[in-house]
Length: 122
Image (cartoon, rainbow, N blue to C red; front, side, top):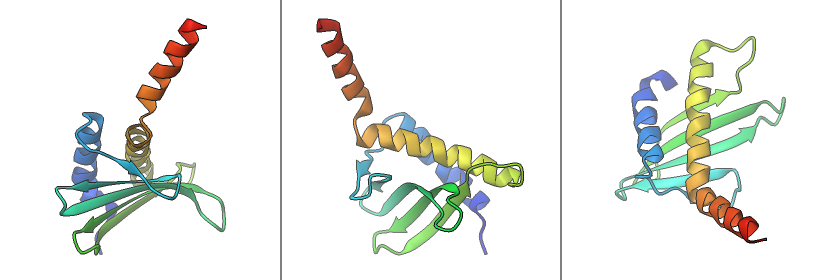
């Protein structure tokens, strides 16, 4: 069985291209889930959530192909004293990707600039 570490190069490149604003993330019906498509062939879904049983925060990235088949899922839980370093590193990567995707999908930078301009006029 494959581990999330196997997918780190893909996740890292996805984060880098997202930071360069080359990936167009969109919101979904779930306010904590964002999606993007790459050339109509592959899609990614990044999610922020909490486990039902323990309410432990997690981040999850799912890659799908054009037929909507799952290629991989990478999950990581918020770091704790007991969590493995692999989990903690993956969580940091997914958390940053989530925040970048959210900023793009919700056009946060533009909205903050608009509010700043409004406040400057008051």
